[in-house]
Amino acid sequence: EVQLVETGGGLIQPGGSLRLSCAASGFIVSSYYMTWVRQAPGKGLEWVSLLYIGGNTYYADSVKGRFTISRDNSKNTLYLQMNNLRAEDTAVYYCARVYNWNDGGAFDYWGQGTPVTVSS
Amino acid sequence: SSELTQDPGVSVALGQTVRITCQGDSLRGYYASWYQQRPGQAPVLVFYGKNNRPSGIPDRFSGSSSGNTASLTITGAQAEDEGDYYCNSRDSSGNLVVFGGGTKLTVL
Image (tube, rainbow over all chains, first blue to last red; front, side, top):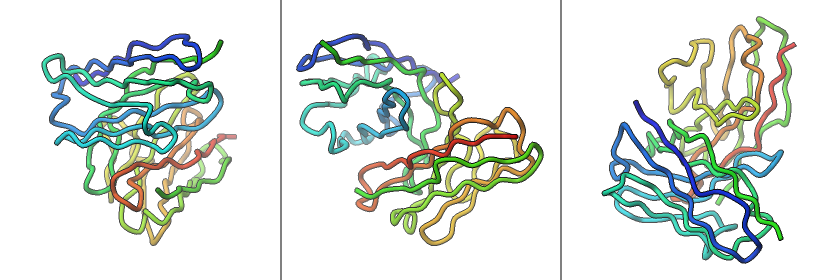
């Protein structure tokens, strides 16, 4: 059974750093494109970052230069390192597995989400 | 990047058919995927690609695409279909991902 479990969220002051983890089971993370998506309170889904199978990384303009996506193959875990956090980064962060990338990309499995609150 | 546009809200009578649309330039080259999100829950993939429905998704959910518009159709809407529906796809560059703003579906 495919499962994704995010951890690492919490309350952090503006300018601070946080690392989110997404532990995967039931499949091999390095064999799939993987992604992070966030949802601010009362708002819609916002794509954050994508990690290609080959290691290429891509980011939304809103987080480029501040966030870094990576994976640890030995732990079968995806990460999101978030630096220089801002109030507008407050959201629930979801990791998801990407399927069918050639046709457009479908996020077929999602974690339960981890909340991040940036506030002083 | 590019944008995907969705109507903010749609309503449907119980048992009737409703279509939710998603417009964007990137949809001329890529298929949209559709997600249902109920309050307090993670999104769930309900339709993707040319004609694919994940295991466990009722066959009343179907999708189509024409030009720059993708559609999700629910034939015989049920009360449990209420929620927010989002489309997404690769953007026009092919390297990034874009989401639509979401459509709130109300079943009357």
